[in-house]
Length: 251
Image: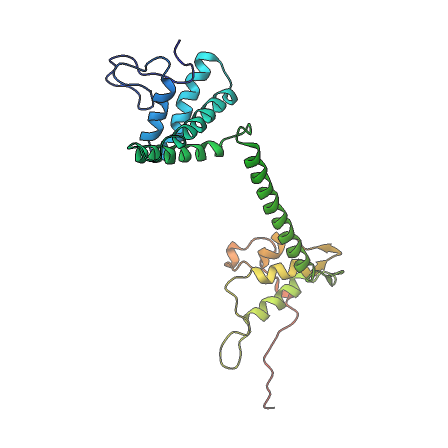
């Protein structure tokens, strides 16, 4: 009976699928595993996944078996063949060929490790992998805790409250500060973006006893033509109560 795990090439099929096993005479019964491994030896690593999927689909269509059963068979096949080659006489004339096939099988098993959902790999390998993942997670948790502690230094217990109906008045002052120039003509504050202003506004100031929504604050700092201004962007003239001017230190 032909192996259910692999799809064999039909006899005298001159246009076979590239992943079908066997030769012009098909695949000899009882040697399907060898034919499959011959594909592994010949193919680049980028073909391992489609090769695996091609024969998995055949296995599931013909035997209705699960992928777990198929995967275990493929794993044990590759693992057993590596052990076989390693047991050969290292001084034989086939040594170079054996080493090449061992290397290809190791590459193939590295691919299999990436899709092993059933922990078919050796228990000690799984434990090492899980410990490595746990250590990585613990380091990430520690990093995040340190980041949170650092951010906590910038938190305030109570935000500065903008009085009455003068949020836009305060924003006008922030915009003026952003536009101030020094006596030498350079800007007092240099920022390539407006986000530091509106994020500072949201983080440290409140309005009418509530936090200031980020979108509301951002709209104030989007520089647009008046005709394109959205609600909350353009500051009404009657709200511009203050003007920041340079002090005349010579007087």
